[in-house]
Length: 293
Length: 259
Image (cartoon, rainbow over all chains, first blue to last red; front, side):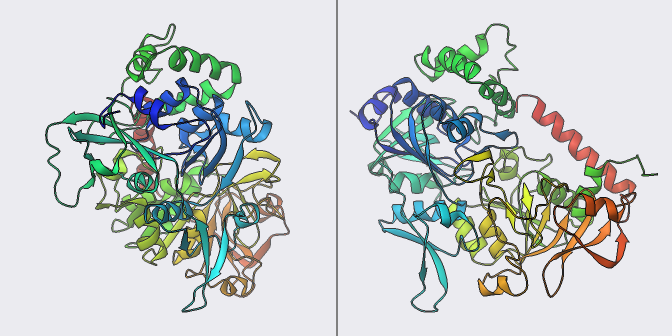
């Protein structure tokens, strides 16, 4: 497989059943196209980690891809619950879902430790919270210098780190900007990685100190225009807040969720066709489907 | 007769906004806290620095964000930093004066639950979870909490402690050696509660206009402590109401379309 490849091929080659994955992007640049491709290829028994599961993991959980979720805030931002996540936690549908729950500070530190090749992260966190009672991966250590009690959690070392970015050049160097979340850490912490980008260009023209991930630190780079929809890509398109609101209805019942996934993900061959299917959805005005990004 | 020219939610947001002192560096949660913080920025506290955990420092959004990472927050920020940096250098590093949080449940020592209703392993309602809250509650200089007051939210015992306030009261928070001094006020749709200086138990110190002390006590799931002299919150000014309504109108318009 060459470095710059199709998303279908990248997922075929790099994502296997039973893998642990981190599809990151903090509200911004969420790799929805990659999530859909994993659903289309029907990967199973995945452990998925993400600070904010968001609609992307709601879809993967509801589609039955996920055995375990590692996360720190599991809602539909500004809208309410993630219904497929809740159904899995509360009613084990479509399969039982194990959860490992953190706070954001812990998840961020765990990615940084993973990228650093360290076995664990240390932070001033979780004190006074009940989270350590239910997550045995949160432990406390004493600072060898001051005696302060600090939290320790294992590094996040996913099998595959998957992120979306604005640009890559033809060698596969990747440039991202705006809210950069923990994307760089997720790629550098992972054994393998896939980066989808809005466009592949001749020259990145990145200013010094820009967030650039060098090509040799990335597994595969795939051009997927609009690949972060319904989240957003700074400089390309805005967040489709209307889609996030609409998802509340689509995902509330199992039947409507399954019908939507079948029509728009399983029966489309790629993300471009997915986007067109939203515009063509019978009986739905395109603005309701959130199709204009 | 209660004044019907404003709603109890508007009174809550305005009372919460007034607690923000001008120039404070403020770590803002989404929802009610974000509305109050942005109102403060547009009224008496124009030099307040709004920080959102998505990495935005000094955001001045024209509309309220739907998510903690809306593009508007990044576009209007003085600086945009990676999430690891936000939680390590800025929050854990002790650079934030004030944390502003919402909650699903709160107890008498202002510990909060945003994780589950019911048992953790067999939840009745699975809530979003911690996000940045435990470390915001621990590390900001002080913490404000805003939520609607009723017996489902103001409970004798939390189903789950997501973020520590004054723990079990008295000096118990100090024993945990948190850098910040914890919650200093809880602002609800009925009034304002502040922790007793010694016991740290939340005490009703102000009721909003038209609300009786009995009403607040009745909406609290534990025997609420009431200050010897309970103040009445000043009603919203015309300016506060018009700025808040403009903000919410712009917000509704922005999020109804295809952002």
